[in-house]
Image (cartoon, rainbow, N blue to C red):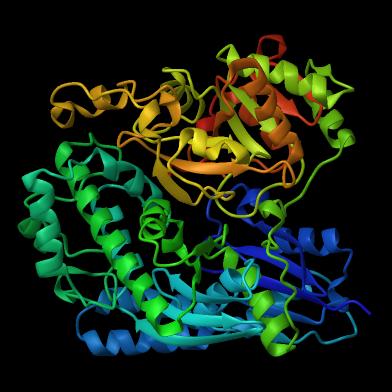
Length: 620
């Protein structure tokens, strides 16, 4: 009889569900993709129904349900924190307590009520509660390609832990060190996210993308960095840290920072959202990114010293900081590093299920030198019939290709001619990155492609960089990286031989003057500091996407394309063919490719009653 474990993450942000059957990862998905509410924190009812259906398992047949953290420990932390800071934070306490008592203290009962919606059976399915950082650690180690590895988890906060160092071997995980709330590298980075005008738990990647616009050598950047180390944090040699809580309000307040003290310290106020980005905020982003990288490297060294392992696995929201990941890899502290593609809270659903399988059930791992994430293509796929329903619904005009080889040839030609393509294929990705199944594609050689995609396709800030998808075998042709990067979680420099020289006084130029300088022969994926967030594409893992890029190389000599997620700003990545068609029609994408169907924007009818569509999604 098959044994199946359903993993759930919920009630904070990025709710998700995942399912293991006899230890095999069969399906995993974010709730936001179904509800169309970005970072949806609600119980993942739609995602759970999907993964059960994909696995062919009824709720009654489950061996267990695993929830990604321990709610009672979180409640304990909240009470102890308010007690420690009393009488400060009374207003926040009074607003938080009713919610916690109603929703969190009675979590088990609430969970059972939600789980009943998945099916009432005769069997009482046990519900397990592994700790938050154990769920992260399990999501990092168990799917990794390593028999043994050091484990590093970094995020804002779980129950009490904000960072852990552990060791995994076979089916066992041992947590060796823990950093506790309120001292947190994730919350520190989120504080700067807030202060530079971006949304916490959503805009951290914008802060990372903004950092290279700061001048690393300027006196202001150096001063900001010095003040961070002298006033905000005390970082020890092992990477542990203490925050100076007089500068932070997140423990008991309604804001991340004490704005008055930060303004006095840094000489500038918090930046209002959507306001003009000045050089001072860019330098601030550069300073905190440098500090973050230095802390991550120190923690990496400690993990190596504690475990003696040559392998490292990582998870937690901070593990999505792909610039820091690249810097850590460059230090050669470890021979190999593997990062969970769903490193944030959504990945906790998978980690909880795997902790239940390997620790609670005591099941051995099967390791064959490859990770078990299946390219992160773990979400739903949709049939020709479902694409045809969309065609009928919108009276869409299309071309259909019997041969995928011919389709790849024609679409590669369209990309080479400067068109932007919505590329919708197979199973949806698990994790925050589009990896070639729910992607928007363009020509990396085009000087205009970054500007066009940001302003006319994604409707987002013009400074934001785009990632390349490169044939796995061609990585070293373009980048100073000699290993695969399948999950877009490493930033490395573009090869020196491909770069163009900087103009005089490059660092003193205005943001957009620097942005639109042609930095290399692949300018649309070369960030302002000559780096790129790399996705390598394997013929084995995603043969259709590999074939398209290979065909593009046959025509142009370049084995890479621009890849960004198939959505607009504030919208979750598209899930269904209907989501994809509506997003295509609402933007200035030129063509949409769903399966073997190709839609030309010039031939389509405008969507009816869709003039206010941009109000549908809250800006992130």
